[in-house]
Each structure stands twice: as C-alpha cells, then as structure tokens.
Length: 331
Ligand SMILES: [Zn+2]
Ligand SMILES: [Zn+2]
Image 1: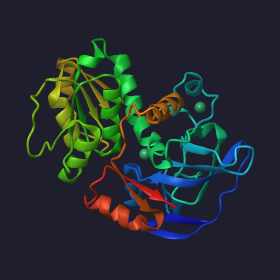
Image 2 (image 1 turned 60 degrees about the vertical axis):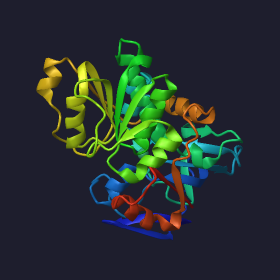
Image 3 (image 1 turned 90 degrees about the horizontal axis):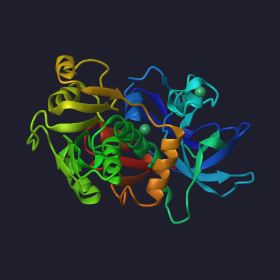
Image 4 (image 1 turned 30 degrees about the vertical axis):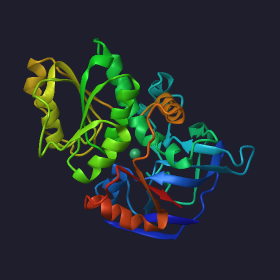
C-alpha cells in the first residue's frame, strides 16, 4: 500500500509500505479520511521519543471495512487500544488503561496510509448520510467533549450560566467550545493567536474569537471555567490570571511540560486544576453521536487535501500558513 511515512526530522515520504496484516478480533479498514493532529506535528519535529522513525503517523481516521462479515460498512476509528481488564478499564476510565496503546506509536502503525488493522471494538458505525470527512473529526472532538464532561461533573453551579474561556483555536479548542455550546453554555470566548484562523472559526462555529496578543475583551479573574487546549507556559499564565476565585482550569494541551502556572494564586483563591487526556470509549461514542445528530454544528472548518501532499501540509502548519484549524488527508 501507499503510506505517508515519517522518515526523519521534518521529513515525510509518500512511499510503498507493507500492507497491514489483520489480526484476530480486528478489522481491516480502507482509510478514507485522516486528520493531522498537533501530536503528529510534535513527532514530525523529532520531539517525541515514543515515536521513532520510520513510522506511519496519524490517529484520526475514518474509512470502510474491507472483507469479512462487515465488508463495506462505514466506520470512524477510536485509536486508543485498551485492555478491558485493568482497574481503569473496569472503572470506565479506559483512557488511563495501564497497557494503553494508540495507533501511530509502536507497536501500532498509524493511519496516514491506505489501510489499517484495528480491533473491532474500536470501530463506530457511521450513518449513510454522514460523510467520512466529518466522521474522522470524532477523535479530536472527543478530547474537548471529555474535558467538558469532566468540567461539568466538577462544577457545582449552573453550568449553562458559566463564563468560559477556551485557549487555542485548533481542533481541540474548537471541539471544547462546541461541546460547551452543545451543553447549553452561552458565554464562550475563544483565544487564538493566529489571525488567519479567525474568520473561519467565527463563521462556521459562531463564537467570539480574539487574539490575546492584540486585544482582550476579558478582565482578569472573571472566568469561571478556562480550558487550555494549547498547554504552553504563556497559556497557563493566562489561565492562572483570568480564572475566577473558586474557578476551574482544565488542561488538555501538551505544549510545554513545565512552568506558567501561578500556584500561589491557585492556592489562595481555591482554584481547581484538572489535567485531561484523550477520552473514554463512552466519550468517543457520545461525540460521534453528537457529530451525527448535528449538535456540534456544521463542522465545515476543515481543509481537505491528498495524502500525497502530506509533507506540504505539515510544512504549512509548522509555518502558521494554514488558515484551517484541521487539515484532513485523503489516501
Ligand atoms: Zn489527535
Ligand atoms: Zn486496561
């Protein structure tokens, strides 16, 4: 099969690669659409020692099952492979599974390819009226969905009336903001430093977007809930400053490992900080349903490109020249 293979720092090659072999309890999926994620960028830059080259990246696929009893069925793929038996899996927190694997990290190849073998349990059927480009957004949107669910479970006051800030206008940030909207929250601000992305987010997601480096409509200490979808020093500084006394910071971004948080203010003002990672299998299913029933909006903020143009797309994201919050590649 053809695959887009990460072969070294800032280098991808669209080349012939071994076809995946379908294992027991797995299905072979012909990939239709697959999104580029921030963590793919991280690996592409050589910053992820868990993803050594040569490797097929990509963990946000949708496609069609090939062969077997389910031949021809449209599916979207939950890329987290979990054991089902450990205490976290049994507790419904399978995203913390002790032997968790994700496609695009050894021992599992990723989805920037024509085919993928994946456990049947990881597949969600996609209705006929939903295209596979939308369906592959289940993975990035599920991260925001999970974060918002955790926030809702943690906040005692009326969720709908909260004043919320989402930091980062990539798919994680947008997904969080759309999940907040779906849960009835009205007062949502989205901070994004790349002005190229603003008009598309405003138009297709109908929300207030601002560039915090230019103007800021918010006052320090007035946000009940802040979701950091970037996770760098600056964004944690911003979250620490703008969150209200007794408020909540939910941290999803994996930008910088250290620094930025004002622990003293968090302590004095009893601010809660929660880290969230990916989604449980239930969150993933709920997100897919929300995509299918339209409660996450039109989802027209994506840019669809051929897989063979992968290198160009990664370069565009790296230089900040991609106006879209999500590029989807088509094998
Ligand atoms: Zn992702
Ligand atoms: Zn487990």
